[in-house]
Figure (tube, rainbow, N blue to C red):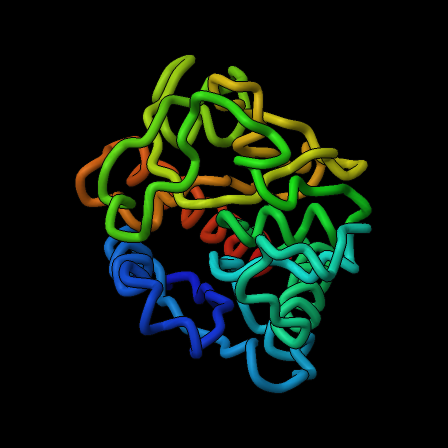
Length: 245
């Protein structure tokens, strides 16, 4: 029997009551052949490096807003919600450990924004105010089971290969912030119709970030299922490489 990759999902347990679909993420990872585990990051500063070293993959999940002091934003912005500096600290430490060890990482929604901030990029603090467009990026937690808009994919990118969606892919959406300036070392690989960056990756590292939520609608969208499966297969490939070394 082929060993299953151990994949940790970072989260803030205090948000479990209103993050309606987090269970689907663990179900999805199990369905595509992984062993998922949760790391509570929102309450106490952790020495997380030792834990990350034992993993085959890392998922940085969605949630509240990133501390704006990490990307030059206004900490007094009235649109901010759910800022948790402890979670930011723990998840950035987990990301950096995985990055340095070459552990495949999938950053989702807030995770994409967090990594942008951690690596010197910048965010739109509130899309309706700072990047107004006809595209609705925030439809509510309940609507994550539905399609919100399409994204245009860069051919040959991981997301394009994993999703097998062709040049365009329908996605769900639930975010009021977004990437304003991509951090150095990353390449944008998907855009919304209004031009907003919807996915990016590190060409030389096994890091991929998406602004939408394939971990929610994987059971009804074959493209989202393909993203989860492709990510888990990358974790499995690293397992094989480490065993062979």
